[in-house]
Image (cartoon, rainbow, N blue to C red):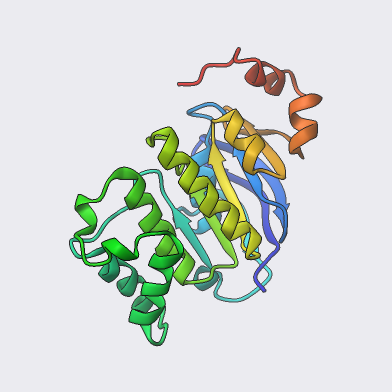
Length: 228
């Protein structure tokens, strides 16, 4: 068990102002805010892709990177088949019987019929499902999602959201960055609201949308803060 994740006075190059918070197992956490608020940087700090310029990030368990996964808005696809992309991730993690586990993951996301197709010729929605298959195969305790549907059409978005719910139902802690209010309502249990690199508000999703405490959050919900 690697959770909780603790951030103590964490800051990053003026993009993230010093913030302190703790994330535990259970409820899905949505990092919400306009573009440029610092959502992606905060996600990368949590995942360990960036080192904070101030403060400390810690997990309760050892070797946390083996128990977490991250899916980006534009996932990186290796120059090989969909199946081989998943197998490669499993072998890096030292998973036995990687081929069988990879096929099972592709079946979970509805891509088994495309297992031997080049990953780079898949549609945007299919590539995102493949990225989720790579994560699913590793059974992560924590899944970080950085704007996973921002460039997808409504049909592909619904498919990805269904898979995110499946992770949540399987017991994976989902932490997702988005600027999409509807998506935050559909998928979130709690909201971390960022504005100009500051953690302005943290609240259960219903409370955040019905009774925002900060003027910045209220303005964002009303569409009065810039989206780009």
